[in-house]
Length: 262
Image 1 (cartoon, rainbow, N blue to C red):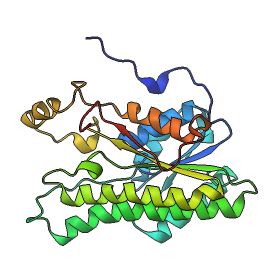
Image 2: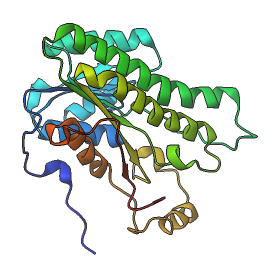
Image 3: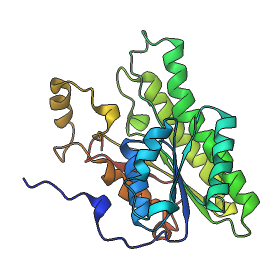
Image 4: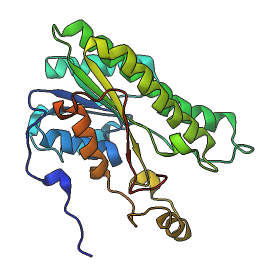
């Protein structure tokens, strides 16, 4: 079977021209792919990551040259989030009006064996981080735009909906992201900020690179499409949800799984 084309390099439609998009976790994986697709679609991208060097490397992969910026952000820390949001506004000349909450960690473990630190890190990064960044983003947008039309996409996970063995902290955090998405969507829609989320399945990212051969083979049997997904396949859905092409979608949770857990 021929390899599929990298969709991050297809012809741009410029559906996001004139918009400023902030992406957390933009230094690798799905976050990096989101930065590439959003830049291709004409957005000015603010790449944020706890690893500033990784964010800066993402910049080198984006079309559009020097208009894009990289900012360090620790999504677990309110001060870091607020400082990064202010830096983004200062460097871009306006507040971001598009947000992708993609920063995440995966710390597995059976419920009976999970320690408090592992549980807390899953929750702090995946759930609390999504809350803190969304709050800072919406506050900045509403305070600095006369017409604060915005959109947020949270990256959850299909296991946040279904659960999964040996992933209790991770699945709980992603289930929380799904619920938080719907609450934020209900509260912010009247303020012209749409909030939706994406539920990826098994995607080829650095976070998933440690799977054994046996684990990968078992996984393939659960996916009707017969393969894992590519980061850019998630990013294309994110770009759609941020654009006006999805203007009547609010609180939606879109599965990008190859058919896994239908």
